[in-house]
Amino acid sequence: MADPGAGGVKLEIDALCQAYGGRRALEDVHLRVEPAEIVGLIGPNGSGKSTLIKTLSGVLPNYRGSIRLDGRDLRSLHRREAARILAVVPQEISFNFPFTALEVVLMGRHSHLGAFAFESNHDRAVAEEALERCGAHHLASRAVQELSSGERQRIVFARAMAQEPRLLLLDEPVSFLDARHQVELYDIVRELVEERAASVLTVLHDLNLAAEYCDRIYLLRQGRIDTSGTTEEVFTYENLTRVFETDFYVTTNDLTGKLLVTPLSGRARDELRRQRRPTPRDTNGR
Amino acid sequence: MPRPGAPLTLRHLLGCLLSLAGVLVLCLVLAASLGAGKISLIQLLRWGDALGEVDAAILFQVRLPRVLLAAVLGGSLTTAGIVFQALLRNPLADPYVLGVSGGASIGGVLALLLGLGSANSQLGVAAFAFLGALLALFLIEWVATVDGHLTVYTILLTGAIFNAFSGAFIYFIQSVASLEQLHAIVFYLMGSVPSFGYATIAGFGAASLLAILVLWSMARDYNALSAGEEDAIQLGVDVERLKRRTFLLGALLTGLSVAVAGLIGFVGLVVPHLLRLVLGPDHRLLLPAGCLGGAAFLVVADLVARTLIAPNEIPVGVVTALVGGPFFLYLMRSKKGRGGLV
Image 1: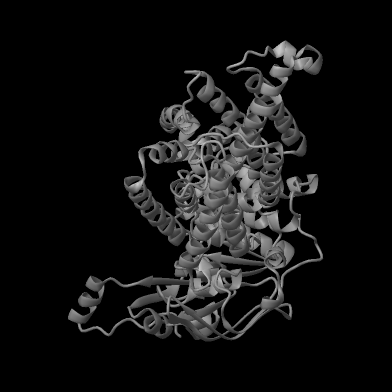
Image 2: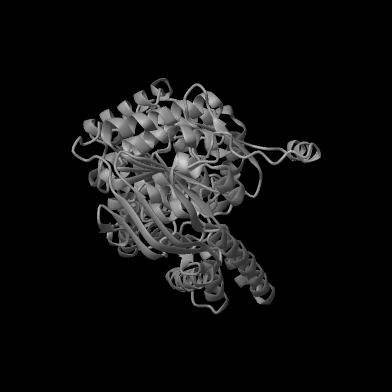
C-alpha cells in the first residue's frame, strides 16, 4: 500500500538537548535508526524516552542539537511534511467524539490532503488495507469510543499505517494490552519493516518484548544514552542493574535463543543474601 | 439524512446541506409570513401583486430584516459553539465560555447606561458592545497565553473568571441605573433580535460568513483534534495556528452576536449536539450543517418569541433557554446521546 519506492528513512540525532517542564530531560543524545531496522528505546521512568518521541513528533519543537531525516533537518519540515514521513502510536489515546474506526484510520490521510478535500478512492483503499492488516476490518463502522483498549489500539496502529510513514515511532504502544495483543501488534510492525523497509523507533517497558523484536537498543538513563548496541550487547546484568537500579536475572530463552530478562523481587534478593550466595550474574556467560 | 456507517463523501455532504438549506428557507418563509399583521403564506409567495402597501412595508421593512438577522445570529452562534467544543475537547463548551461575551455585555450595558442607545436605536449599543468584546478578546488572549502557547486550561479558566467578573460588573451597573434604564438593560441581557436595516445586516452577515468559511476550511483539523493536541500535531496539524485562528474567529462571531442581540443561550450548545447525533461528528459536514441548522433554529425561536404572547414579546434568549435546557438534558440522558456527550 505504501509507495514501494519510499522505504524507510535514515534518522540521525546528534547532540540533542531538550528541556521539559523546567528541567533538562535530554542531554547530548546521539542516536541512529536505519531503514528496515527496529530500534528499542529502553530506560526507567523519567529517563527521557517519551520526551525523545515527543521531540521527534513535533510536540516539543524547542530543542537544541540536530535531528535529520535522510539528511533533511526536522526544523525545515512543515508539520504536514513531517507527518508524511513519520507516524506515532502513543500508549493510549481517547477520542471525545464518536468517530467510527474507519473515520479514525482515514485521519491518517490528513497530511496527504489539502483543505476542504475529501478522501479519494486511493485514500479509502489505503485505510481499508491498513485495517485489514491490523485484523480490525470488522470494526470499521464501530464507534472508537465503544471499543476495548486492545481494539482501539489496533485502530490507532492502522491509522499510523494509513499515514504511510517511513519512520514509525512507538511510545509504549502495548503497555495496556494483554500478551496476545502485544505480540500481534509487534508482529505487524515486524511485517511492515520486512515488506517496506520502514524504520522503527520504539519505547518499550517490557524488556523481553524488546529482546524479541528489536535489532538494536539504546539504554537511556537520566536523559543521557547510557549504553547502545545490539540487544545481546546491551541487555547484560551489569547494564540493566545499573540503569534500572534493581536486580535482574538474565538468561536465554531455550526456545528462541533470545535473551530472557526478569527483575528480582525484594524477597528473592533477601533470600539470596540470607543464603550468602552472591547476587546472580548472568548465566549465559557474559 | 441518517448517518451512514461509511465515512463522509462529497455527495452525502451536498445532499445534507441542500436538505438543511431547504428547511432553512421554509423556516424563513414561515417566520416572515407570521406575526402581528397577518400576511398569508400565499400572498407572500405571490409577492407584490397581492400585497398592499402597508403589508409590503411590514413584510420588507420590519419582518424580513429581523428574520434574516435571526438567521445570521443563529448560524454564527452555532458555528462558534461547534469550533469551541472541538478546540476545547469539551462537549459542554458554548460560544460564551471564552468570556468574550462578558466583555460584549459590559460594553452594551454601559452604552445603555450612558444613553448611547435605546430600544429604538440599538446600533450604538451594538457598536459599544462589540468594542467591549474586542477589548475582552485581547485581554483574555494576553492572560491565557503562557510561554507563547494558548492552552485549553488557561482559556477555560480565564473565560470563566472573566464571565464572573463581568457578571458582577453588570450587577453594579444595574444597581446605579434608573428604573427605565434597568428595564432596557435586563431586556438586552436576556437576548432579543433587534430591527436593523438591510445594510447593517448585510455587513454583519458578510463578516460572519467569511469567518465561518475560514473555520470550515479547517474542518479536518478539528476532526484530527478529537484525540488531543499531541495526537493532532503528529497527524500533521499546526495546532498552535489552529488554536489562535479558532479563538480569534470564534470570539469575533460570538462578540458580534452578543453585541447585536445580547446573550442568546443554548443555540450554540443544543444545535451542535443534535446535529452530531444525526449527521455524525465529521466537522466538514457538521460546520456548514450547524450554520444552516442554527439559523433555522433561531428563526423559529424568534418567531415564537414575538408571536406567543403578542402583542408583547418574550426575549428570544428566554425561549431558547426554556426549550434548549430540557432538550439538552434529554439528549444527555438518552442512550444514543451518551456517545457524543459524556
